Length: 302
Image 1 (cartoon, rainbow, N blue to C red):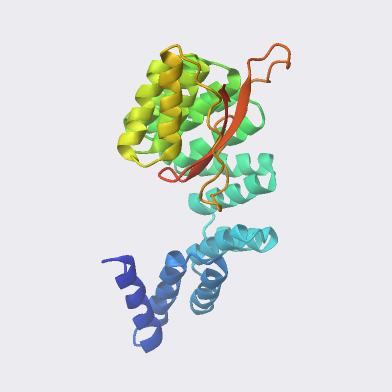
Image 2 (image 1 turned 90 degrees about the vertical axis):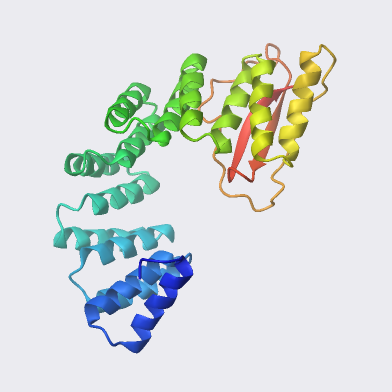
């Protein structure tokens, strides 16, 4: 059921479920796999109900169903499933992690951190656990703790790109442009075809008044997505500024996709804006980046 394309795997699962030739263990596993392939939480829960009915002592099925409940913001049932899973498998670092994610979404930071501490103790080489813990510290404005947690994670897995995206956000919040640039450059080196990090660095170079470096990043972005309107327009505006001619206002691009995914704010935690009489003219830009799958909010100089 796990080999071949997703379509082939799904078809195999349906054959196992419909023919009921194999034992209930395999039928339950087929329902679990169907839930994993589903992009509909309610449908996934229905499949997991079947899996649990057949194999009620399998902790993984409660973990899966709890996660699907959390996607629906049904946190009470999610936590109940995690409790059942942990009763069956007290040392499951994965159940602790998904419960920590649920607590994080609920704003229960202390409980999330406690679960992450246990998960890291059980599985110290899982990089995502360090990253999520650092994100919680950053949300609490504990930047020193966030950087320390990311340093621990990087020591475990130096090539985990998320660490450097998180580190760039911490430095952005601290107003440390050099640290942010170094983190974004490392992120881009690890994932050179992902547009998000390149775009963030281009914005940083604009903010620092380094148009040549920003233009180079837009060149890279256009090589990855030649038809992207914002990249072309922003590059043209920077070239005009670099040449000494008035560039006019920066283009303001509002989610051309209409139903863009939830915003991933590049300017989150940026230093407070200057008073109106002191600040340089700026425009708020919200740019949806189809290739990167994110919406970024930034302030661009006119």
